Image (tube, rainbow, N blue to C red):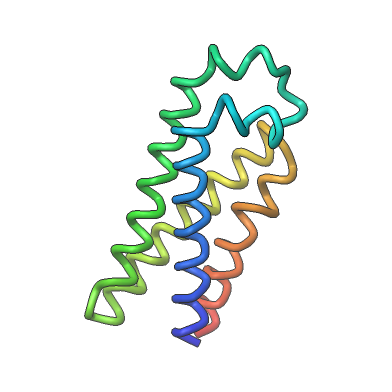
Length: 120
């Protein structure tokens, strides 16, 4: 079970590194294609806000990687649990305020990881 949890944590980390890249470096080029409900003219003025969000997503990913690299299995799992919980909360908030799809893309994978931790 620990291997599956670590795989999920790694996938969530990769996803958040992608979000970092997207929000920090591709917001104005790829943003309008991904967030079709947001008017295209708003991407340029919101570039700094998106970059700030991207940085926070990078911190979530870095925390998960940190948890994966810790040699002590129990301590590493505590770190992974904390950062998966942070991702889940952020994803649920995003789903409630920005779009339902965020729940399935961000919160659900983290919640699955947390569920597996709880039953292991």
